[in-house]
Image (cartoon, rainbow, N blue to C red; front, side, top):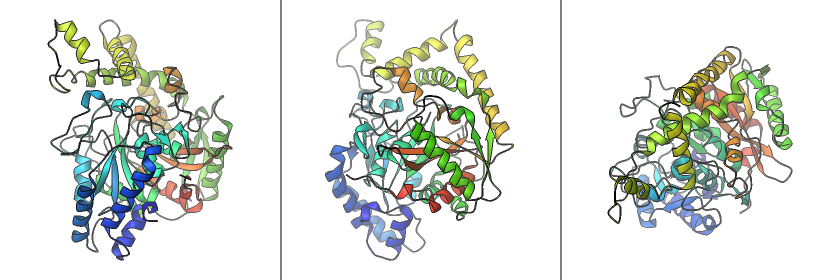
Length: 485
């Protein structure tokens, strides 16, 4: 089935002329029509004629030296600006916004020969962990449509899992690539902060946001990273760090010489026993492949949630200030009575979670509270970062669960924001520390729900994660399992 191919399999087929990019695109468009109404992974599917014309163009320019992504259909989370294609952040504030330019990562993918199928669902401005704050409705995991696909990149994860897209691009601010990857049983990479340009990607929390790939296996992740990684003059947060050939890290199944750290702080009371069981089995598998297992401690992990939910809302508050219907957002349909009336009316298009984070962040940044909340959180953030730096002196990478539970039921956590926030407990530390993290399938619960593990690496050490993740997938078949839909 064409829609089930990985990037590397599709590239091989295109090279050998077993099928065309147009045939690939048509297979995906047909499947989207058939399957996506029950999943809700897409918020916009491009006009069929436009997609097929793009695929025909890719066919006509395909050569034996073409990039492996050339002519392979993909999707983008609906926060990536795409010239001439609606980009909404799944918010009423931008429901009719059509960008006049491409995000840097989109431009690079186009240069590599991308065929864009459409835009995928996300929590509003990426604020959430279940896609339940999207104005387009919740995305369901293809493994159980009564449960969420995760968030905020839930649409991208579900699209890849349900074979509605060969690969997708997401963003990760506190686990928004890794958690939905786990909930949908696919592979997703949270890159080091500054490894991939954020230019042209709608901001949530600027010191935490990262852009990364979501795909069916680690091999595909390496191929995408070879296209999107690297410095960009339009993103001043990017250091000029050399970009390796990530495919050189696809070295088979031997992990001899590598040490994997296992932190006690990530195996906590109250986590689902199936999650702990499957992740510990995966750690044992890594040991069988030659990796040395070492217990480590990340003592400030217990403060990560509190730190994150001060810093993140503070930066959300600052970033959302631009959506005042003067600089961004649709103009008001009536004239305001005064300035207060203007602001009250202008912000009504934000959903409850957005308003909640804006209010919390504004409070934390306000005079008299800045030192007590935001500044203190930044100091503890430094301690969390130092925990990882110390750990990576003794280990090459760290293995933990992605989420304390398998995918939860739709509406299960919506009435309790704190319970929703605690679902990020194993992912947010990586964003606070600016390190990289790879999520990949490692099994299923007793009720056949996906479970994922994450490999955490030092800053700009994505190659080690790719090597370890690829070795694991070469010796297991969890990533090959498909949902029955």
